[in-house]
Image (cartoon, rainbow, N blue to C red; front, top):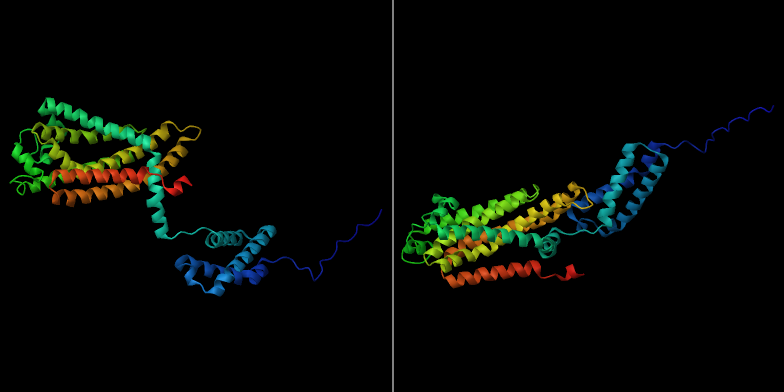
Length: 346
């Protein structure tokens, strides 16, 4: 029986791998790389000299080499995590596509926002029809029985614009007639109420969309109720055309925004009800990203409507000009949203 051969002795020229030695040899490169990345993140490429820009990819490759060795030799987890995070930062800053804030805003305004609105066009048509149905319902009820008006519009908010008002008073509230200045405060009351009401309902329509879209459709129907009732009062006094101009100058923007907010909420509700092959949570999440882009635009539209209401409608008293401005705004929004962009086609 042969004796077991002795284990080979560890030679002096093959020392054990040492984490401390590995760090001491390479840590200077990691520190230098991290400093350059920090300056690049804060102030951009202009913060680096030409030599530092040339050095940046070399330090990145050196960090990747250190990461590869760290993974192969099972070094401590803290060092491994640090090198992985540093490598990811370096990749995105050196090779990733970086957009300036101005470029991102430009992309959103020119492409992302209109594309999101176009994607919910079916929901927009549905909500627009619901708003119209609400207006037609209240209009027909008030036109046949004026007492219905007080169920749709609060008396303190109507500011005297009710079936009991005279033609002269109603005309003055629209910025016409000798009593226009006297009723200007009343005009502001109803205008503020209408804008605040529509804005609040628009935001709630979106926020409650997750409940299968039912509250969204109910709120949008309610949105049209007050408008239809008020039109019935003015039309009954022979002032329907004038009231339409008073409402039209800002209403095309404001009601368009209301329809879009409802469409955004309805998109989420439809995704919850009909998720398809996806889970309901995932379907709602994907719909929410599109709806969120639409709602950012809705806020901008409401701001524009507020400016038209606060200044344009008060300064412009000619009814035909009011219709012209409202029509121009409607055509602008339709063209802005629904004419495809070159990048969209590509």
